[in-house]
Amino acid sequence: MPSKISPCVIGIDVGGTNTDAVLLRDGTVLAWHKTPTTTDIQQGVELVIEEVIKKADIPRDHVRSVKIGTTQFVNAVLEQDSSKLDKVAIVRLCGPHSNGSPPFVDFPPALKNLVEGHYGFVDGGYQGTFVLIDPEPFQTEALHAGGLDSD
Image (cartoon, rainbow, N blue to C red; front, side, top):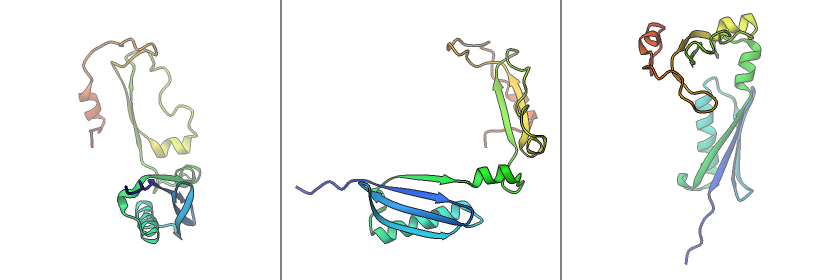
């Protein structure tokens, strides 16, 4: 009877200078790869995944999961880098119950200007006790008017 092969895990660290990956099986390192961090983070992650799979000489379907750690988001926030941060839309399902404190109210002003997109308070949602709040239809017109869609 053939032995069952344990699944592999890939761990990736995307740093400001280098992107590192390691491929593990049962706690044993089968392969690792280090490369300079690319401007396009996804491209760099795909590269290190390909490299460790190739170095370990395993089939792709032996990889059960990929775990990524990165400082990229934290760095973008700390640097307030508009090229790495997008506007964020907030839809708060609350009816009239929770609109006294708008989104981003406690953000530093410069960061708030970078990331605050459209926000709206709409009817619906649930209390913490799972009791339905005002079962009115979802207000899609208001969301579309704010430039929001499902894409």
